[in-house]
Length: 378
Image 1 (cartoon, rainbow, N blue to C red):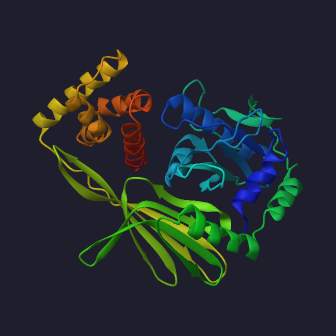
Image 2: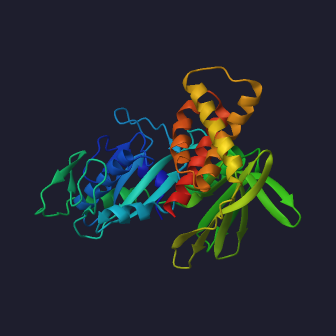
Image 3: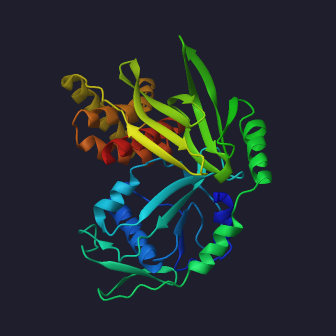
């Protein structure tokens, strides 16, 4: 079992990117350009490593190797994007890796690319890249190549040694559990559970009981053996259940209009553990978008647009408008879920403006975009 934090440290110890790994300060999967560049790197790394894993480390300064972190990213359908745009698509896994020096809402993203031994190419046009294009790693750069390329295995031994040096042990696991329970979340309700005598899952949050059901907010869930954060949200409610064989969460989102809010189930995630030392994660979107009166939504949509216009022009807001600003991300999300197509673009535009104006509204915008991304991919 590989400790992903150690793996990232071992990769960064090589200092410069190579033909088997790349590092990024951040990736933008919300734009065509960002998706295109991400797919280009996936394609190039897969072709350059036909017989071994390759990696992208996200949240690291390129020149200094300083670990800065990025927001938690929990889209299990990212493979759908890769399959849609790449021929002979590799299997990819995106994991959120906890680092002790980062703020609680930041992680380092680790993309693991598992090739299939075939030449990977773009299936169709995206941004400025043409369908049929093939990319390879030329040192630290992903470059387009001719169609008659020959893929060679040159990195297997290096990658194998890096992965072996990152294997987990009992000391690292115990240190991780103690740190999670006693230091990182000492102010929250915290628990751990051992599965199949091998896997340790820790979770923490503010516990709330409604009738016979328990829910958590400010939830953090981590698979300690691999230092992988499985779930993090500063806002949404989560229910948790487990047996000896699985650990299951159901995430709820808080949506509504005019102070009439309700919790809607969004996604069910089940981690299944097996006796042979393996596990798999199964996610299922269970969201039924709430529907509202179109006339009311038109009024709210236009009011949101007027607020954004004021922020853009740096016009001061009154008390009522400041309150509406806190609800702007969720109401834009509701508008999009009710077939206001331009609401998605407005929500994306609002994120940058809110970041410089109101911290709480900015946090709500990140959560709304996270929900929108999940719904869009499905």
